[in-house]
Image (cartoon, rainbow, N blue to C red; front, side, top):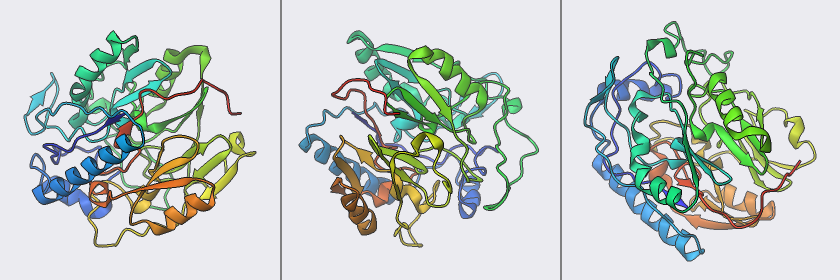
Length: 337
């Protein structure tokens, strides 16, 4: 399993794609702090939690690998634009593992254009070990990729996405693997073009299902709908008002209300990161140590919670699922539907 790093985490160069997913009270922060590091004390607190997380995973028998730091505040450019970076904290966003294939995602944020370079040493190693290494078409990310007339639909408004269909883009975290079935959503970084590219890339061995949820600012599916084990599904109680037909025969648990304090900084996400758990197998699940409602909920649902402090890492836009990428798992490829 790859676990991300928080080294050099920085506010990215501001771009119109950011307000479509940022909390409203953080847009001006990202605008005014563009190109600067995140507060060092917050980065250090998140780094300590990542080290604790790695220690816990290794104690549970997981082989943990880490990406290489790359400079995040160095300006880079294409023929059309220039930007600085963000971080290499969330391997789940940049890479998609399906079977023996590892796919570099063609991400839509300019600040993440070179993020996969942090994982290149590992990708080369996995390739030498027999993995298939692929990459989505490297996007241009010109202004044509973004709806220049985009306005915020509000929390109750109809879904309006900032990405266009100019070229294929997707974050790997907008797909969740479920055996031979891949669950996907369109979002403010993932378009139909990108989903269709992945569908053709994977071929007939996998079926890609596309769902739309009640989410006016969608980005990444792993805090909305989370298959926990065969026959058991965790859902967001508001974004998933009706369980998709595919999962009708499954046991369903609504995620408990998050308990992250109002004053805790969350730069890029809502409090529903409490759903961003990590399944180690059909029984063990990593849960935030301070999230007692989720701890009790997963225990009641039949799982064994493994507790880890992660609230400071949450500030940077992800939790246990975002911060990891499971590269190899024991077991065989199955169909659960």
